[in-house]
Length: 379
Picture: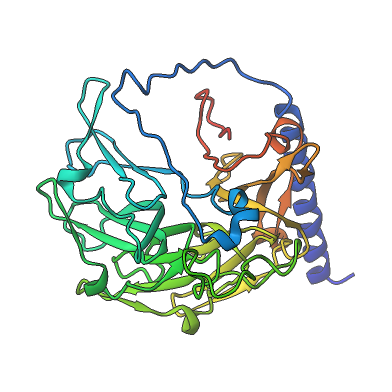
């Protein structure tokens, strides 16, 4: 046996050993539940927000409950730079107001959305809110607000005085989409936040003036007829340029959530997509010039991805992935995915979810965090 072959075999065996060892550690953890108690304090904190679902064209009455179940969102940022987190809530009915709760520093919040100019975003002809993400796109030290919608999204520039200005059209972002997710990330590392917007339903669909009722997925397992995801490059002058096609990230696989991180440790942020009606997708960033769809053990594992979270499960300085899926016993039980990152060793993720991690009901959102301060992340 040549020394080169020996090294390759030894490295492969070591990688397999690492996978088995980490799986064993996971198996020992998921069975236990550390004690934790939470108290409901919304009302006494001054937060009485109630999400209202969107109304739809009567032609969709038979599936309206299914389609209109989306759109409830809360996003967190310190928009007024007082070192206290504030909250932005979205609702999804025409005429209903979104809410911006400013932190009063005493455990209470006050809704300032109307005076800030971020309340009345749900208007006929413009669309309804599905969620929002904060990001300082112009590097002026103030968190700006992007609201993704079924309709025209809105970019709201933080003026630094408690008010926001709608700069959507000026920024080149007034594109009708039926989006249920967006993230800010600097894909080309030029120091400016770029914007990735997911398209769930096709962009030619107006849910209040339908031309066709053929709006749903072509397959329950490998659908690719959803809305097109779009990547907008920040040009540094207040405008954005659509670079989706040139960079190869225009997935149409019914993306509900996206996350960005350097999964292969090459210094460039990659994209991970949680897709409904099909497999998850990982797009590897090649120097900010193009993205490549990686196999990574994802292409045949078809589920219904609702959300994606990133964390380092075993403190290995790796980005691991947790994706929630439809898991409703008696309806459709798929189980959540906890994917451990072995891209360096094996070119793939290893799915290890079991027990309460896999079976958490019909979960929509998830986050990692060191809940019991022992150095390892929980989810």
